[in-house]
Length: 490
Ligand code: GLN
Image (tube, rainbow, N blue to C red; front, side):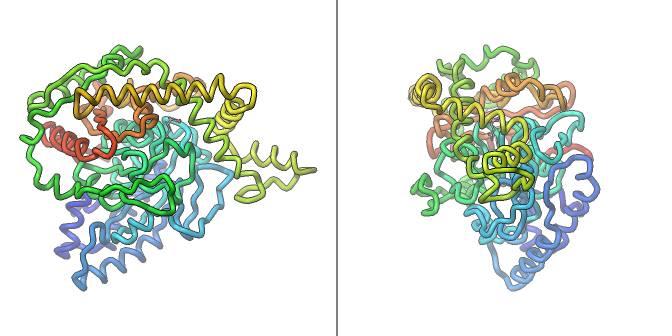
């Protein structure tokens, strides 16, 4: 049996019926990693020993009749999530040997639900990027075409799910880093509402924008993982104390008739964005027609700040990053350059050696934007635009239940194509980062393939805490298009 091909749901059924063991499931994924990851580069750390041990424990519990949502299921984690006793590098040389003393809340929740942690996946250093080319260690390749990027910054997680080197994964999304790699790798990814999932133990990039979410083979698996990781956590002061609906059982009962009468907004500013690829437009239109066929009514909405969103985000995110990354100073964590003559020299040498070019660029931009003389001109203005973006969405949602759009202007670009052009790279986030600025949830669901065989996703956004609308619409689309659990033949 090809155990590596199973969704969480399928694997869970097989494990509970004792058709195979968790150790066998883990071994089949480890074999895939052995065979493919030398070239794909999805992982930074593969914890074979820990995974086999946890799988054997899960098998004992399964044999005793114990049941839990993820009992014996192998999950990969973006290497920005703290794991007790397992290296957490953030894909940065500065944390190359950092081993946390504790698990992030989401990691504890996964373990409590019985999950087996198989390894830590590659990312753009500290999640800064859109292609996973900014990792301090190695790039990750797109499993559909190895000359292309997997997207980023959660590119390792998306590539691992897509190449069937884990059953599901967690990523993080500050401006699109779950949805965009999910779209480029042909898998499902959800960025939950800000506050829905605890950020405790997630190494901060831009704290007011970061959220953790699932990357999976189909929508049902995302619902299942969301149910495990959502919920209030007193360790995170921004964690929301709101009830978490049972997404999984709602989808189990769901029938596409349930979409009838729903209203989907299409932001008119999005479709006139410069550089929108014809295949992306074609499959966006196709997905829109499919949803219309299911009874969803389309309405035009306006998000007037679209033109300013990228600029405002690229002031706010680096500003927060410059403050968050100040802790990596060679004294408290990780790398320290010992050749330095004095303290200032030690800071300089440690940070120059430890941080890559993109991280240094963001720290410099952020520090400048927050400096006394320029604070109001840059950071102040960017926060005012952020408030206007939130108002735009509130107004748009007066006329619709969800908003749909492409995830990225193009399918996965070629490795190296944008590395020397940060501004072009930043512009690829135009459709995703506004939801982070407004704290809203968004999903990417596969909706087609480009003429060159690269996956394309549809983005669905909803109001705060309405992940259910994303899951139901995504599920309806997936059932109709039949693009779930589709993977490259490797
Ligand atoms: N590409 C965006 C950035 O570089 C978003 C990254 C993310 O969501 N972590 O900031």
